[in-house]
Length: 465
Ligand code: AMP
Ligand code: ZN
Image (cartoon, rainbow, N blue to C red):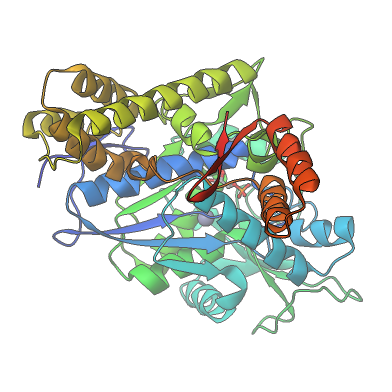
């Protein structure tokens, strides 16, 4: 195996990746809280994680990837205060929390598909592992790490000496910061809820019996319970966005290591934020809430433009989003697609082999903490080199195992948006019925939407202008 360097937030440096089991990687990525659509900032993090997984696979590792769906227990404040996000979504839309979870889970999975992000081996819903979470809390209770208040069971962070080993924060200033969200019954400001009781007299939509009373699990416990349930002690890499470092992942480490007495994940990786003009981060509560649907699909922009755009910035650097950056990414992807089409045409169907020296160069870049911007420079160097065209085609398709830009599907006509597809079908029906005036009118309508219609012997061809 070639050496892979990954930046580990635990040590704050790039380290050689060493798996716990030879040739295998256990990967856990924190999934979405399904009370709303994912915004394109969230999706940037999932693109980074997809690249990580693909690079590991490209290096020959067998990756076992788990992703959770947070469908309960995530309050609007990360430190156990505020409203339950699912109940909030339910009120906003007049649907049950269960319906909200189902709808936004499907929307999220569709976003991943549009971005050519590989599915995890296992999807797990928090609500499907309540028993595992309760068992873990009982374990922590037996080991003396918990205490009870009027509103729930809490983890006592003062009993876990290395609490700030991931965040590297100064505990005193952290205690001050955490105190902003007041809960006078907490022993330490950084303590967090493992189980919350349903408020007296209130029937929550999502609640379960537990040894401590009816309620629901805190947000952090689900990721610890699920990662251990499905990866056992094979805990290699855990990822998320940088916002998870100080609270969510810090708490996961504390409760997991307290429960097992063993180190939890060896490597913690975090993707930097997507920001918009002026340096503001994108948030679900913002007016700048851009989704894949409203920023790309509705504007008839191939969602892979966003994927390609994300490649221009290293995952640990903030990425700026603007109309200008989308335009540049759109041109860049089109240029690359044309280069690949040209090489394929020149090769004239001749099969080539992967150019080993260019493969080694590409591998060196992606294995250097996923340096995709520099890997893209190698792609250009290879395509502009004087190696044989058939070799170029084989090499770019090999690179595409990491890039995931569907460069093997360029000859297939692109799928048409639903409204255009409907017009096409109507025109086919009109032609079959020999309604020529109607057929011409539908053709004009399709062309006005930015498509060219060609009637060929093989049928109607519709191509985006
Ligand atoms: P959430 O659905 O809020 O739990 O977030 C899903 C993922 O997106 C997490 O890994 C977050 O860390 C990440 N995330 C949240 N906001 C952004 C942002 N503006 N840019 C990049 N990643 C983000
Ligand atoms: Zn998580």
